[in-house]
Image (cartoon, rainbow, N blue to C red):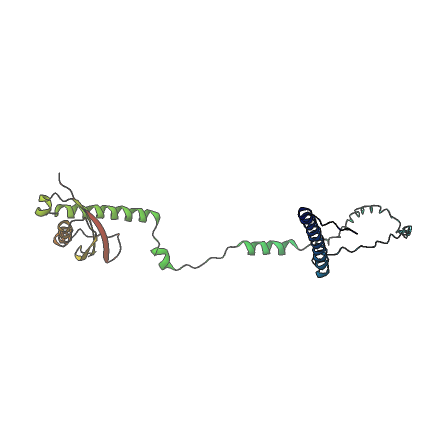
Length: 234
């Protein structure tokens, strides 16, 4: 038997083919083992099949009939009460007036109509002045006041310093006098705004004393008066 020795080139070609086939087998085996080990480790979540039993639903029971409700009662409106007829009271029988004797009735009337006389004290009647007397007293008092103002005006002196400064104004003074016209005291009520005029007015009242006496029909022992004194340059 004769054996032919293969050529070197052909032997090398077959060696490469064998190595390539072997590498493919090894790679395939490695891939299979990798995926099988991954499934065993739980890398993937297995999908479980769910069984759904289809059960036929029973037919719904017919609704039970409701018990009959209370019958509707129609409420009829109540008739309005009729007003009761007014019962007129029976007229009372008035007692007949008793006749009295005419003489006694006349005497009672006379006694009731007679006015009572009050005894007024004579002093109060004499002291109450009449309207005519009041009018006479007021006229006499007004005349006396005008005489007082005229008397003060005649004794008035315009201060030289006030005249040079052209000071003007009205001063009101209060003073008291007795029945003889003598000045008891004097005070300033309203200032003119200038001290020279105020001082001159107070001195005027004291210098003009005695003043005109009060009239006889003006009662009172002491009289208090407030008089304005004017100072104006012409």
